[in-house]
Image (cartoon, rainbow, N blue to C red; front, side, top):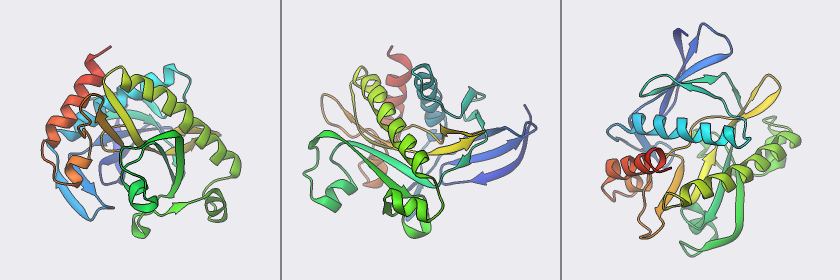
Length: 236
């Protein structure tokens, strides 16, 4: 598989076309951003860590019946993926109150929710990724009601599997963001699953082990990412 021209460069990844029209190469960067690109920095080896974690988790989810874009790991920073037509709707699943859920609705931080909350956001940095509902997404022509129902169903299924996976590794899956795309008539999970897109708290201490350490200048960012990688890859 030969890497061709750059198709897209985002805040955390570069995506390249290949000599197979149905495949792309996704490469992870060390760049870090927060608050919709208003805060910028670098986290040493973040790209290597996030690629390793994402490859492992995509494989785990596929083994549990979740269709994803992941094909294989190519290098420390790169994975081969199916070429998705990305649906510009982000799906967020929340198990414990944190972040914008606390700010927007007044939940007490760390409140364990009786059942997961599934939210939809418009994927648009210029508009600060606003919260939306299904009617907004359909009116904007981003997805059909059936696609949105499938995405939310998959998000709940993914949440069930990931909560079990991380609990076995002494991590609380607080909340996380998912992206989906179309591939040959199917809707598949895409993007990544990593400390960039998830909130992880240590199950015993409650210590934050994700990008919140960068967002709020808590220090120990690289150590937190590396520890999550260690638990994901080395604890079976």
